[in-house]
Image (cartoon, rainbow, N blue to C red):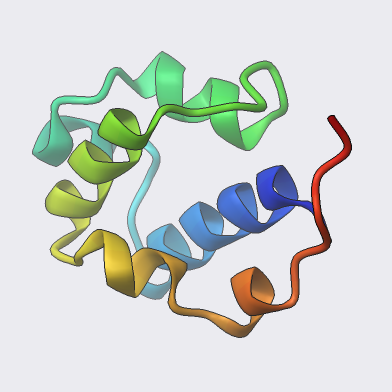
Length: 80
């Protein structure tokens, strides 16, 4: 799995776990709903760490918790 796929999957997972719409974490985090949608639906394949941190804050987790999953541990090196 690549990092983008892991990132969008993790965001979907966190939203679904909490039974939220895309707008709820946007409101809580201050990240525009369009930004979240762009990440989830492939328009933005390289979300910034600040955006992810804000999103994590809105979801009540740390960046460590966001990335501490088997998906991220098993990512393959990115092609440069």
